[in-house]
Image 1 (cartoon, rainbow, N blue to C red):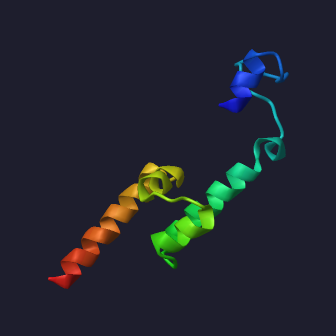
Image 2 (tube, helix red, strand yellow):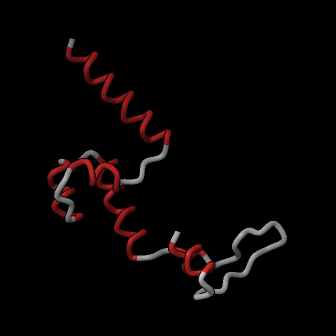
Length: 92
């Protein structure tokens, strides 16, 4: 989103193909924020840490903010729901 804003303000020049898609090396798309968010998301998906531990690492104070911060695909969310329902059915 920041890239689009900078492009609109003329602060950044972006090369595009015939379809309007941005032509940019992948390494230019990765920021420290991207790496940090991916790391925390991977910690969450590993199920090795508590949410409190991950919040401490990421610096989040509120659980809602933390849950909004991690980046899960629709498939990952579905897998989480399925594993939680399986755990509950195993208890009974």
